Image (cartoon, one colour):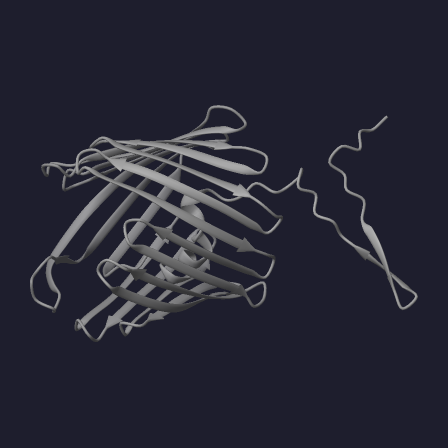
Length: 311
């Protein structure tokens, strides 16, 4: 005989001679929430596209179903830190060679650049619920190399993560679904090299049409975001960032418009910075990219175009 554990029958109410069915929440079968570090992912997709300045060319060739090689060329200015309010840029160019191994339970990605930087990423499913993630960057510059390992455990209605990084960095997070649409979470971290620690809390409410998130941390950060899905192809997003220690406040509004052959994303923030990012599919495996960012206050204007060949 089939088990009825976890099944909550709907309740019925009678009003004015009419019977209405009221759905009850089954708290034993709540959905699994998104990872704590990804609670703002829908807003970031619209508000923070991969903007660049200059020319970019990316070519990817698959050798078989699991292994592929990539080549990337970039030419454009690089912004250097300065005391001036205006941006100072120097011309630069580099070539990047990459190798990718993709398997249902294992992903390996490596990149090496002509300036000596080496980037590596790893994702391995140790079991159906436990995933190991790692990333590292090696460079010739002193104190700029870093690495991090992340263990992600996925439960039925919760997720927990544990992080280890160089510089005696330790972090842990936990997020729990409390209703079918609401999830609450918290995180702690300790940076031993800098003798700093912190704790944070977050909430996320999502439906089929909208996502609202809020996050606060002892480091001074307060982050709020809201995404409204207008249709299957159009989404509107906004966020509010506040640091109660430095008193910095930034608010932004963005959009994400998906057409049949292209995708257009853009934003404008309270500092007067406007950005747009266009991905146009010219043919199967051939994409054209346009990027633009205008900051009138800093007198910083960035324009870029690129071509992506291969999937």
